[in-house]
Amino acid sequence: MIFENAYGIDLGNSSVKIYSALRNKSYTEKNVIAAKGREIIAVGDEAYEMLEKQPLDISVRSPMAFGIIGDLELQEILLYTFFRKINRFNMLGSSMYFSVPLDMTAVEKRAYYYVVNGRWLHQNRVFMVESPVADALSFGIDLSSNTGSMIVNIGSQSTEFSILSEGHVIMSRRSSVGGKQMNEAICSEIRKNYHLQIGTRTAKRLKLVMGQLGEPKKDARKVVGIDSVSGLPREEVISSSAVNAGIMNCINELAAEMKTFLERTPPQIAYQIAKDGICLTGGSTRLPYIDQYLTGCTGYAFNLSRYYEGSSLNGLEKIIHNRSLRTYATPIKERKL
Image 1: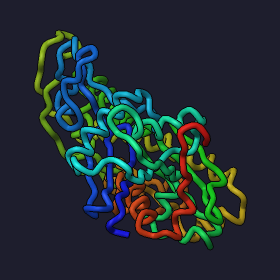
Image 2: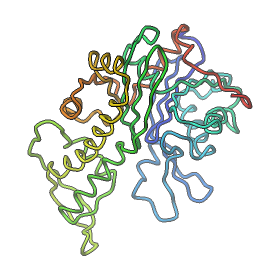
Image 3: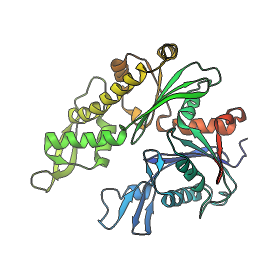
Image 4: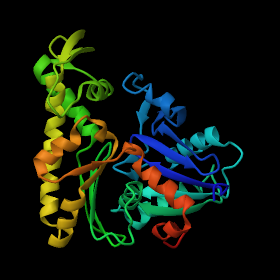
């Protein structure tokens, strides 16, 4: 199985994660393209370095929006460039396993077929795996005998709550709160408390370095931003309290939505979830003590994934190497779904 020409692909709003079965290795690159009109300037990590620093005539954006392919051509260009870095001579006739969100239309599903069977990539077989199923496999859950599990994936633009039972997703809900909203909330808190405007990239760095949901440590960092009054650049020392206040606003909103979602869960499944704990994954779960904080808010125990944002990709890797798990992968054809 290790010699099969297969790839696991997780197209995220923030980054693209690819697992190569031939190389038995995972790769990650930012899902961003810099363009000047129709001309592509930079792709991936190189384009991300231009974000919030580019001139007005250059746009830097992601081809994805809320887990859905928003620009098919740009996404294909980015994937083609990424594949050439991984294996420049063996990109045709492969099996592509995509981790995808649940709430997609037939047109949105077909976009995943055409993104690897278009102008630059050809003759590839496409399979779709529901992201909660991939996450569950990453946690080691036996889906065939599972009576009830809850997966919470805090992504870059949204959070998905899912209930699985007997190998199927029986309930799902998407919240519009994710890592991006946390970054924007940090920007808002700093603007309110320090009259300083900073970019979302700076806010993300502050979140990763200073964010903490346990007992807050007194910490501070120097940042450079634009003075809200004078409009001139200014250096300011930012305390961890302002950063954590922005994060907590978003986490509290997520916890409230999670409690509402759990109230709709059938009692026998809710009992099993309370017994086993809620599975928590996603890039924003790197925040220290986030599992303990959510336990205090909801009353449920949480199991934190050691793969974080790579959880779905790890689930795809297991499907690629285990034929018995391929029943959870749905093939997608060119015209007929």
